[in-house]
Image 1 (cartoon, helix red, strand yellow):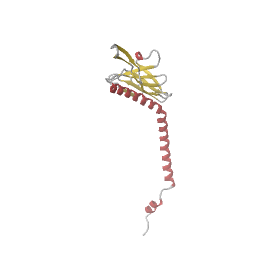
Image 2: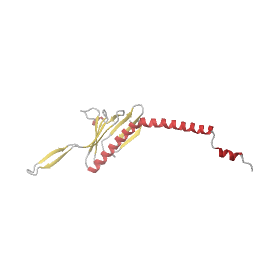
Image 3: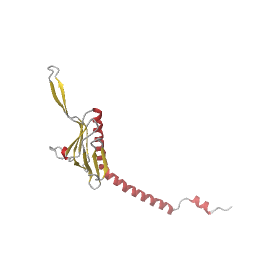
Image 4: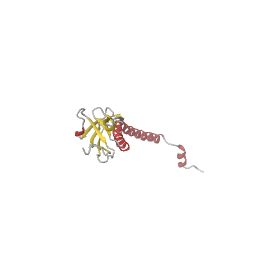
Length: 184
C-alpha cells in the first residue's frame, strides 16, 4: 500500500514561510494595539476629570436628598479644585435659662474634595451670576433636598486630546456630559 502525498504533508507540520506569515500578522496586530493603547492612555486624565465631576455632582444631589439639607459643590476652575460641603444655614433656638430665641449660623462642613489633573482645564461657561465675585473662577453650585440644583454649563478640556461638555439640569439636579463642544 502506497502512502498518499496528502497524508505525508499533514504529518510534516508547518513550513517556515507559513510561520513567518503568522508572525508578521501578529506583529501588525500588536502594533495596532499599541497605537490604540497610547491614544487611550493620553486621554486618561480627561476621563478621570469627567468621572470626578460626575461623581461629586451625584453625591451632592444624593446627600442633599438623604440629609434634607442643601449641599454646595465649589468648583475652582483656576486651580482645578472641587469641594463638596454642607451649605451653611441659620438655626433658631431658645436659650434654656432665659427662653430668648437666638439665631446662630451652622458653618459648612467639608464632605469630600478632589483635584483635577494639572493638564486638564475646566471652563465654566454659564452662569456668570453665581460666580464668586471675591474669587474669580470660583463657582458654588447648590443642590437642594428636593433633588433640584442651580444650573451649570461648562467644558472640561485636555488640550490637544479632547473636550467634554457638562450641563447640570436644574430641574433634576443631574449632570449630563457629552463628548465635544455641542450645545455651548
